[in-house]
Length: 353
Image (cartoon, rainbow, N blue to C red; front, side):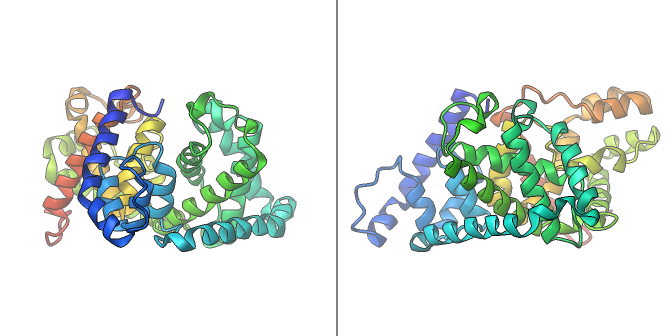
C-alpha cells in the first residue's frame, strides 16, 4: 500500500489548491488549451517546472508521479513538444546498450559483476515484486548495463535498491492496483520495455549526483557519515554522547542509511514519498539526505537513551520500528530536516562546533 486514502486525498487537495495559483498563467501562455481541468495537473508540470518543484516538495499524487519524476530527475525536458521524441530516442538508446553489452555478462571479466547482481536482487524488497522472474530479468539488465557504462565505480551493493522506486512508480502508469500484488509479466511487452528504459535513465540521473558514494572505498559515504556525526553532536548532544559512551560508531549503522538512502529503514511507500521531496530539493539525494538522516536519528532519541549497552543500541538502530509509517510521519521528518538545513547549512563550519 503506497499511502492511506486520507493521506492521498490531502496530497491531491494540496496540488489542486496550489494549481490555481498558476492556472491563469497557463491560460495566458496556452490560450488554445482551455479544455484541461485542474485535475489535469500534468499540463502544469510541463508548462511550469518551477511550480512542479514547489508542489512536489510536499508530495505528488500517484497519477501525476510518473511524469513528475521524469521531469524532476532531468530525464525529460520541460518543453512538451520535445518530450515524446526524447522519450523515444532514450528508450531506443537503452535497448541499443542491451544489444551491445548484455551478452558480455558471461565474459570472464564481467562474470563477477553479473553474479553479484544476480545474488543481490532476491535480497531486495518487496519480495513479492522482485522475486517475479520478469522483474528479476529487468533489474539484472538495468544494473548490468549501468555497471558496464560506469567503470569508475562498477556495480556496488546498494545500487540495486535504487531501481525499485522508479520501477514501481513507472508501473503505476499502466495499472490501478498496488504493484506488490500485481503480476508484472501480464503487462504488454511495449509497456514493460518503456518501464525498464525509463527506470534505467532515471536511476542513472540519480546516481550521477552521488557517484562518489560508489567509487572505490566509497569516499562519498565515508564523508557523509562523518558529517552526520558532527551534525548530531550539535543538534542533540545527549544522543551523541550516549552513543559515544557505549562505543557505537556511526559507520556501524549510518553507512547503510547513506548507501541505500534509508530504503532499508523505511517501507517502500515512505521511500517513494521521500523521493518526491528529494527530487524537488536541490541536491536532495546528497546534501538534503544528510539532514533527513540527522532528523531520523534524533526522532528516536527516547528509545536510544533507554538502551544501556552496545548490543541493545545496535539492534535498535538496525531495526527501527517504521513498519506502520505513512505520509504523515515522512512529512514531519522532512519538515525537521528542512529546519536543520535552514539552521546549519549556511553557517561557517556548520557541522562542527
